[in-house]
Structures are given as structure tokens and as C-alpha cells.
Amino acid sequence: MNAMTAFSINGAASLRSADELEAALRQIGAARYHNLHLFHRLLHGGQLTKGQVQAWALNRYYYQSTIPIKDAVVISRFRDRATRVEWRHRIEDHDGDIGSEGGIERWLKLTEGLGLDSAYVESTEGILPATRFAVDAYVHFVRDRTPLEAIASSLTELFAPNLHEERISGMLAHYDFVNPEIMSYFKRRLAQAPRDADFALDYVKRHAATPAEREAVCNALIFKTNVLWAQLDALHHAYVDGHIPPGAFVPQAG
Image (cartoon, rainbow, N blue to C red):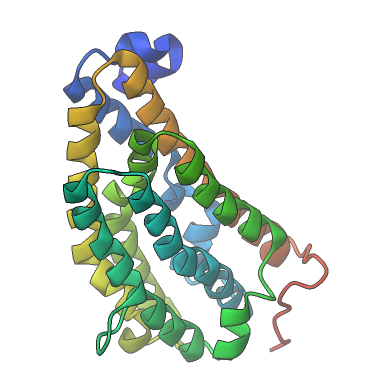
């Protein structure tokens, strides 16, 4: 029986050590990370129209632009200066700094390269209701749950580099409207995500001292995978199945 199966059946009873916690977290990622979603397979396999790719990038902008807000909330949960210092580079990674480009600017290069107006993207007026609800729920989670759970919810970064590599190669290979310059966000995250994931994983392994706390860490990661999965469910329903809600972005024909 693998670690995730044991966790699912027995809950905290299966999480007796930090190593068992890590094994359970990795099994959660293997079973639940959004690289498995059909929308991503369509995106990376070149099976979406330009309008559908635009819709993905537009909606994902809301998530990307909310990450530094989420991380500022995480920082506010800690009296420990060392943890705040370690965590704050995540805000700079996305917001940038004076004279340096951040991830949000790199994401806007993607949306601009796909033909979207930056003012419209930044307004978030055209995003799906489910996108807004899912992303806002993530901010509420790190605000309302324990600091340990707030950090644990970031552990999807353990699985992000493989997804970024698949996205870079797949989109460059299949879409003539995609070029390396507009994919710079993902290239940068190949180095940033492992660094962030290593810290968060070490933190939860050291600070989740009881089976119940380890179970809470696992549930925090499950929550985050659900946040990511729900966004793709909404994109598929709206832009593949064709049920675009009122007020949401409508791709131009052709």
C-alpha cells in the first residue's frame, strides 16, 4: 500500500514521521496536481485555438497577480523574523523591484504576445467567476488557517518544474503564435520554484510535529491542488464545452 492510499484510509495514523509526511505529499501531487487535467493536455498538445489560449492566459493572470498578495498575508502570520525574511523574496519574484522585472510583468508579456490588451488583462474584468472565487479562496485560506497550513499550501511548487518544461516545449512546438520571448515567465520559474519548494518542504517536515499536524499539512496541499484544478475545470467548461458565462472574455472568431 502506498503512502497516499494509507493516508486516505487511515488519516493521521499513517503519518508517523517527517519522511512519511513527505511521501504522502508527493503522492498527493502525483494523484492531484493539475498537470493531469484535460485542459492542460489540450493546451500543451496544440489542440486549442488561439482564442482558447488567450482565455487561459487571461484567467491565469488573476492567479499570478494575486500570488504576492497571498504571500504578503503569509508573512503577516509570522512573528519569526527569519521566516519573514525567507518568504519575502517570493513577493519580489512576482512584483519585481525598482529596475527589475517580476513574474507579473513577464506574464503580461505573454498576454500581450497573444494579442490581448494589457489594460483589459490587468482590469480582470473578463475572467471567469470560478477563477475569481478559487483564487480568492486561496488568499482566505492562508489568512484563516494556521501558519503551518499557510506554508504547506504552497507545496504545489514541488511539482511545477516538470509542468513548466512540458508547457514550454509543447506550446513552442505546436503554436505559431507563441515564441520563446513570451514564454519567459515559465523559464524563470524553473529555477525559482524548486528553491521555494525546498524551503516549504523542509519547514513543514520540521514543524509538523504530530500526526494530526502532518494530516493538516496534507489537507492544505489537497486544498491547493483543488484551487488549481477548479480553475481549469472552469476554463474547460467555458471555452472547450462552450458555456461562457455573462461578462466573461469571448474570443474573436478566427
